[in-house]
Length: 283
Image (tube, rainbow, N blue to C red):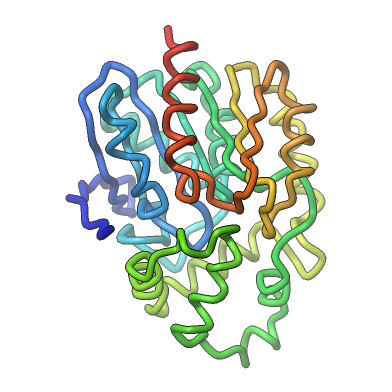
């Protein structure tokens, strides 16, 4: 299915963020994508969830159609500040937030910065619970290797993203083409690497960063849903248990026969699960 929504724009300081907005519900949901991704990662969720909510799916700074400045601090916390500026600009006070992979890390930082505004938090195969990280990303942190690494061919790119899915048939050719096109510019490659360097090294996610994130997750008091694919090859399902232990009262849902992107691979289960969670806890 082609994903070509109308993109809205918002200027936050020196950066222009672009985002999809759908629905007119009283409750607002902010969707945050992962590394090397965009609002495309929520293509199977925006319209179904917008039937009862206002849904905002943003392209983070450096990704998708948003600006890719050379001097931006590509940390999860800086991304969270940009998202708060967006929500301020849209005059949205309280809202629900859901993040996948790196987007989950951004969502945790957002909750730490503005706990009083977050109604619920949903972490979907989120980064931030352990050092394990995909090997290609760890290798890319080595300066000499990065200098001589060539861009992957289309076929290599497709195979790399197939690893995110337990059922590779759920990764459509149209999705691969859009992701591949997004990744081709030097600006996109630079922002991707700067994001990787900000949070990991050759051994995996940075220890100091993980320790800081643990303190922040233990301080979370909003209602929290953790969703994980049991067959996630990027971030193991054991990380889901870590988050559940750290976040008081968190609910954990593990999807069988599912990889790193449950919101795509099992959207038919994911969407009603989130809707039920939001409206059971709203207000």
